[in-house]
Length: 110
Image (cartoon, rainbow, N blue to C red):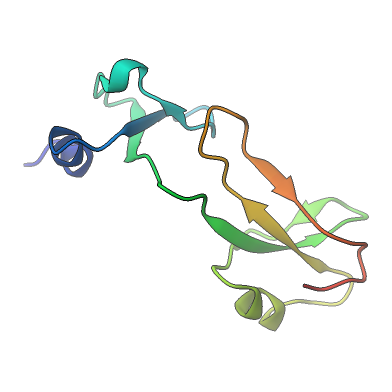
């Protein structure tokens, strides 16, 4: 049986930068000196080179986010229901907190 973090360990051995997060926290952090502990209680990933962008449906009045994320705006708008708008979710790669960003009022669709 392979180690839980086998894929990330191989990437790290080949020079990739690794990020870690606790299962209790959604914040990805760089491993100090790029020296991961490979703790089975944590999640690890290869540090992305570019921020990932997703789209989600939200009701701004209720601050209710649908549980689905879409890779492109066309797919997000396809499943949009009345009273909701699409927001752009951008992953922050550095040590900052991940943030939700939206553009416009609740009637505007991207």
